[in-house]
Image (cartoon, rainbow, N blue to C red; front, side, top):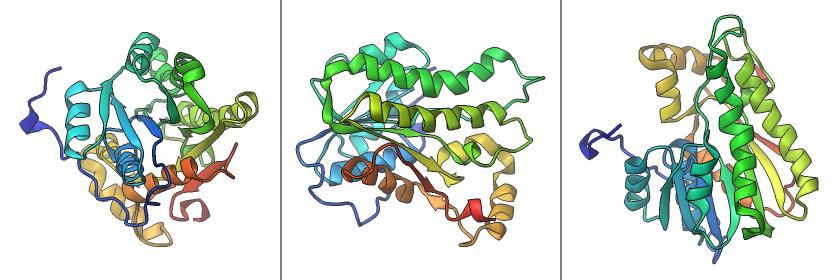
Length: 259
């Protein structure tokens, strides 16, 4: 679908000021799902930390705009449900120090009602996309680098509203990271598990009901606010830069698991 630049959303994200300057100097970071929300925030902060940053999104125009607007080093477009587009997107990148896989839509549908092919996307966009990317890079992925997956609060706190498959896919990402931390050692593999975060994905998921949903949620949360994309992005950079993090799931949800 062709979308004019004038109708595209604002793809700039205000980064946190605590980005570790120089911590990623001379290293290459590739972020799938890096053109908006948590991924874009992580990309901006990784760039501020000295990295060469390439973002990969599903829409070429949006990916180009995100990279250009934020001074990133490159962009690609790929459909993460198709292995050949992942291979093509990574083909000309000589080496990757940190691979970040944050792509994934909000797949919601009850198992007795939803189309099975649609429910497949929860795993195709996460588990299989991750495996295709890792296989496509092969030895070009630094042994001294890292891989970061994304799961989500549904892995720990499922609900009855059609998210059972998405929750299962999220939990599977955490298990995959633990296994790959051993299989791919010494490359570190971790998972970021955000709660409900203030990102464009949230708006797409809830549409006209967003304001009412967020208002009710804030009343329950300990801090009475949502985690920001910049805060979650900083957690991604932490997983890239902290050599002691391996096979771990880092929760960033403002205490929502406590209430």
